[in-house]
Length: 333
Image 1: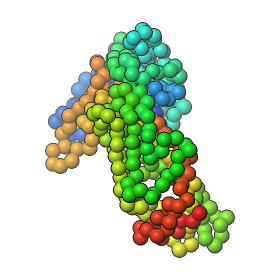
Image 2 (image 1 turned 90 degrees about the vertical axis):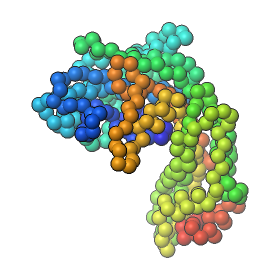
Image 3 (image 1 turned 135 degrees about the vertical axis):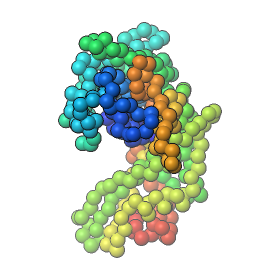
């Protein structure tokens, strides 16, 4: 969920899978009529992260074209961006104005939408946690303008499975405990455990590669009061390893390090993700969520926090070596 807003604008506005609703491709009753008159609608996506050094706002335009198919228009970069754009943030309690500048340094994967350029608006100004911010996007040519307001989240205190990078990852307990004290305005988490390991040939050990495996332990795990505390049976970790790593009679593995990333999100981000989960069943019509006044999209807050470089407790290796699910992985010291 929240993780799908990871890696800032272009990647964020994919996964946690957000596809910009720039054009309507569906034939459901609540979709737009592609033969209607053209009308520019500003689409804005932004997630303020007080733990990040760079903030990105993504701005596109949605419109209808009665002479050209939506798929054709989607492949034309000029069709996706306003002809002129001004983007600013205002810190409500101080009145400070932050003007964002356009960048094209975050690459976008090829797909339905044109990927030759990927314009984002960025700032390196410090964003405070637990503070109100207003985003304003204007098109000086068309005089169109949209706004939105959000209250930022604050970093959480990660307590488990690692408190700092001097911790050890142990499989001695029956459960792997994930615990964090939420920061201000945090309403839900995604949590991902990262495993870095060497994979090498048992006969020729010079044939070696270092790989990463990512275990999504929690997705959209909502918290109301108090700490986030969740215990996961270590059996689930063995299953994850068995399903993710490659096994073979001549393959051996060695743990390099572990890491954990907590992705926390504000209430409006949770609301957006809850409304925009894929429809299942016969009825495909979905509600729509947008908190952009005068336009479409989402302006919210998240905080990404990671602890990496955690070493494996040596005495726990035997659990991996003898467990029915993982002994075929041939883990060694």
